[in-house]
Length: 336
Image 1 (tube, rainbow, N blue to C red):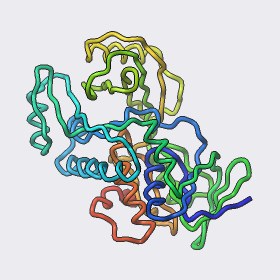
Image 2 (cartoon, one colour; image 1 turned 120 degrees about the vertical axis):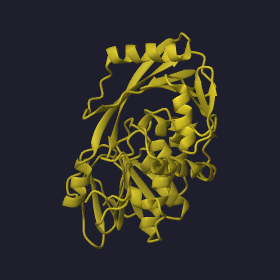
Image 3 (cartoon, helix red, strand yellow; image 1 turned 180 degrees about the vertical axis):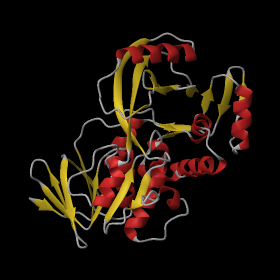
Image 4 (cartoon, helix red, strand yellow; image 1 turned 90 degrees about the vertical axis):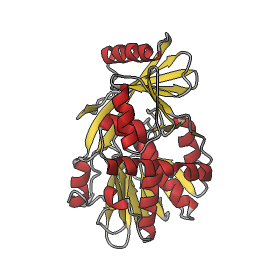
């Protein structure tokens, strides 16, 4: 049996669900098709962290400003969709704290030194599981479980086929498949763009312990508060798609995270997710160059930070509205 929603979004990670929720809030009937397994967005700490990401990635002022503008879309987006935004700030503990403070201030971030490093109120977070559930409950949005195996279309409509034979038709499709391989039938130009996305394997571990009042980060490491303790992560392993946790790496990471917090704790499960990254580290968001086919892909480790920005750019492109200035930095055709 076939159905024909206004928009089909393939993928229920943070970019797919943010985009679907934005479109549904604008009055579109949206169907999200997703296999239902844990994805990189659900295996994440939910950090919305323009300041410390700018420090860790040593970005220029233009990129830092873009990350900050993406963050600034969150309060209205969270209020609109009933999400709890945690504006606790973040701590940095590491060498050369004075240099880190100077660097962040030069980039325009509010930051202050403390005895162990620095604190910034600029970085926020969101609780991942409740946020994904709330977005999925947006009126006008329906989620169906299925693995899309083929996508074909012309100037009039797209045909989306699942592995079990179900078929959907729509004039508009959003590809939000993260670091997934190209779906059969994609136009060559879009398949090439998807193939160029680098998978990056990341693992994190839950530890039951006294949670800090805010995210604490150090070189190559973070400990983020969560219900009952902290999550300690996360690795960045380009080119890997395997999902089996690495016990040795988890042991090293946990020890470093507990030392960062100066606590002990009871180690819980380690989880692995595969992120997608483009050559410049920014997502692909907006029209693909093929009629009716739009992309919301590859945010590297900043999916939660970039979610509302990607959603707005993609929805504006679908509706034919003038794109905001930041759309150029995320243009899917920028590498063509």
